[in-house]
Every structure is written in C-alpha cells, then in structure tokens.
Image (cartoon, rainbow, N blue to C red; front, side, top):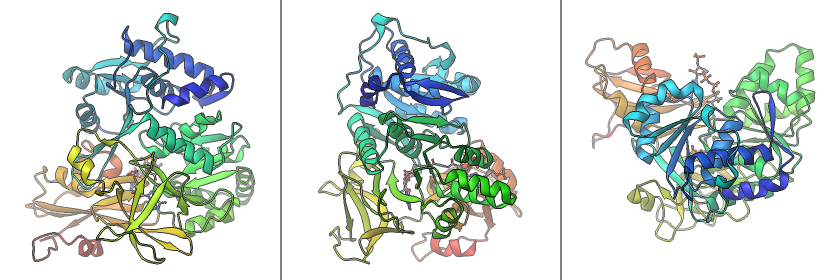
Length: 496
Ligand code: MLC
Ligand code: AMP
C-alpha cells in the first residue's frame, strides 16, 4: 500500500529484499517501482484504479511491480505462479485487467490469452531500470482508494475477488507490526506464495513497513529452509502448519549431529508464527522440543487480514488463537445474531475494524450477504472463549476445505468434475489429514463400470490448481442423501 513507499524514503540505504542471491535496498525498490509506474502510466497522471495483473515469482521484481502499480494509482492483482491457464484466465477476465506484467517464465503461457482478452502484455524484463525523472509519479494516493484484489474460494462455485483499500492494508500491517514488535533489524524468510495475505501482509509488508529485510526462497524446500533457520541470519519465520509438519519430518530423518546443529541455530530467532489453518497441538509441542520456540498461533482471513493472535510477550496457549489484535473489534454471535458473552459457548466469529475489506469485486449481493445488518463481517468460522482466550472449533460450512493452508471450495471442484464424461454425480469433501490438515476427497457416481481416477486427476490438473485436485477417490453406486435429496457430506466423510 502506498504508505509503504512513503516510509521507504527513510530506509533508502537499508537492505529491503534478498532474492536470487542479491541484496536490494529500499532505494532500489523506490527507483524500480517508479520505473514500473512510469511505464504503466505512459504519460498519464493516474491509472484511476485500473486493475494491473502481474505474474512474477516471489522476488525483488514482484515487489517492484506491486509498488509500481500502487504508485501509479492502479489496483494490484497478483496471479499465482502455479495456477493452470484456465484459473489465471478467470482472474484476468473477472478483474477486467488492462495490463498483465509477466515474468519471462510465463510469457509463452499467457501471450495468446492476453491477446484474446485485449490485455496489454508487459514483459518484466522490458521494464526500464529507472524512470525518466519528469515521468516519476508522485506517491500520493488517497487511502480510501482500492489497492489490491486477491481471489478467495468460498461457498460459491467461482472464486471471488476480495478488494482491499490502501487504508485497509495499512491497518492490517500496522496492527501486526505493533502486536509482534517488528524492528528495523529483523530479517524474515518468505517461502509462502504471494497471492494470499499470509505471504503478502504478514511476512513481506510487515517487514518493509518496519525497515526490515525480507529474504525470498522461490519455493518451499525443507532442507534449504532448515539451513536458513540455522545459519544465524534470520530473526523471524512464519508458515502454515503443513510446513512445520514437513520441517519436523525432515529433521527426524537426519543424523544426530545435524539435528543438534539445526536445532541450536533455530533457537536464535526471536519469533516463529503459525497460521492459515489450525495448528495441531502435537505439532506445536514437537516444534517446541526441536527448537525451543512456542509457535505463536494467530487467526486471519483474506477479507480481514489478521484478527486474533496469541501474545508476543505473554501467554501462547496451545490450541488457542489468543485475543483480538489492537484496533480489531470482534464478537461471537449465535444463530439469531445475538452476541455471546459466556465462556465455553460456541458462536460465529464476526469482525469490524479498519482492516475489513471494501467489497467482493463486482459482487454487491455477495458483499451485502457477508455482513450483518449492523455491519459485522461474518467469517463463517466458529469459536469459543476458554478462560480468557479464543479457540477455533471449525467452520459452519462443509463446503470449505483447508489443505496445506489453502482455502478450497468443494463446490468449485464439483462443478468442474461434472463436465467430465466419467462423472454423473459427485460430491467433494475434506478429510482430516495429519500433514495437510485436510485432503480433498471426491465421491463419484459414474456411468462407467470402472472410472479411471488417475486419468480424471490429470484431466483436473489442467483445469484447476494442483492443490485442489482430489487426493482420495471413491466410486459409489449412489451418493448418501437426506430426504430433501441433499448430499449428506458429513456421512460421506465417514466413508473415506
Ligand atoms: C501438494 N501436494 C498435496 C497438496 N499440495 N497433497 C495433498 N494435499 C495438498 N493440498 C502434493 C503434490 O501433489 C506433490 O505430490 C507433493 O505434495 C509436493 O507438491 P508441491 O506443490 O511441491 O508442494 P509443496 O511445495 O511441498 O507445497 C506445500 C506447501 C504449499 C505447504 C508449501 O501447500 C503452500 O505453500 N501452502 C501455503 C498456502 C498459503 O500461503 N496459504 C495462506 C492463505 S491466506 P507428489 O506425489 O507429486 O510428490 C490465509 C489467511 C491466513 O489463509 O490466516 O493466513
Ligand atoms: P483464506 O480465506 O484463504 O484467507 O483463509 C482464511 C481461513 O483460514 C479462515 O476463515 C479460517 O477458516 C482459516 N484459519 C486461519 N487461521 C487459522 C487458525 N489459526 N486456526 C484455524 N483456522 C484458521
């Protein structure tokens, strides 16, 4: 968000980003983002919230594009580098993007689509290193303007664009910087994708707000991450529970001397955070034994940024997500919408505050439905308060699955599956899994005697992101249904 750029002037000589083996200063970020903005503006004074999509792996280039778009008055639409073409095309069409900035690796994949949709394709490699001084745009953009659109899967079959303003993002960042005591001499490793809030806000933007340094690894690899955690250069690390699970599994296969070395190195960090999905207590305890760190678990969502957090200085209670962050208003509501004041009484988490998103992009009815009449955002997550701290109990919809920290809509997968000739009827559910939290599972009624599920999975892989492809399959004569003909998904889950 635009205030990040204003602050960056103060840190010009400090290292902002480490990527591809090189250090980049805040000053270099300002210079390059001015060049991106100048190119996007091409003589105009303001993009007036044109949607600018960009597909760039986590790197200096990613941040330069993000900041350049903001600087020019555009709305940043980061695309996932691992998504197949139909998923990318959906976002380009839905946002009505006017420009697509592409890293070299994606030019071939996207050139024809951009042409077809009449979107200007801007290869990252062709952007100038610095702006012509008279074209360098100012960094004053009103905080109430739209800044970013991220796509989230929900209880509809198509993902929705979550629009946040510069003011929303500023609040989401500042509340975390304050609660987790970010300092300019912090250094964090980012291994998360940069099309979701966990990577964009909690890791990258909190670091850059603070004058700290964010180091990118292009992809999660347990061995590389362990070496980085142990080499003494980092102060902070944040990840989803699946990543901690994978790091533990890797460590357990090492010989004793490597285990001792890596564990001792990791002790020196000042903060390790887990979020985006429930952190199983055994994972928290094992990690504490390995590294001495009690993971700080917090709770958030694309629409609101982070809302609840365990304490940086005080108690971090296993299985709990703490209390509302500074400035976040939160309540638990019962089914009639009444506020619950009692402990140990489950209710829906509802949120108000400056971090709450503006709207679902071009979906006024969905936006309205997401809020109560008196303005609370309905998260769909159920929690209770236990002896002063909140604990997440689950979601109110069986159609939302969390796998590897990614939110997945069962309805979206069902809608695609039904287009395949081997599928007459289907139902998708999330099945509990130690490593992934949940794995996607599909039950299929087929006109074929023996449907080929491996072939069906490959067919899906070309159409939807890989992590949404079912890992478990069941061929059924009929789906379990209630008297109204609705699939009883909780029954189905038991069959897996
Ligand atoms: C991948 N695989 C899966 C899978 N994803 N299997 C089951 N379920 C899944 N979800 C399999 C692949 O098929 C492959 O199998 C193997 O795992 C490795 O695949 P990969 O793509 O290389 O996976 P990897 O890089 O290891 O990815 C794991 C991960 C990733 C945990 C790093 O899922 C990830 O980055 N998750 C973070 C998502 C995130 O940022 N969420 C935040 C949303 S914001 P094989 O057999 O081929 O080896 C939000 C708000 C908030 O939630 O509160 O933060
Ligand atoms: P997303 O919509 O991808 O931003 O994912 C947000 C969802 O992740 C929330 O609505 C929760 O269901 C889930 N989530 C995030 N953090 C936690 C947590 N600490 N424990 C349990 N669920 C979480």
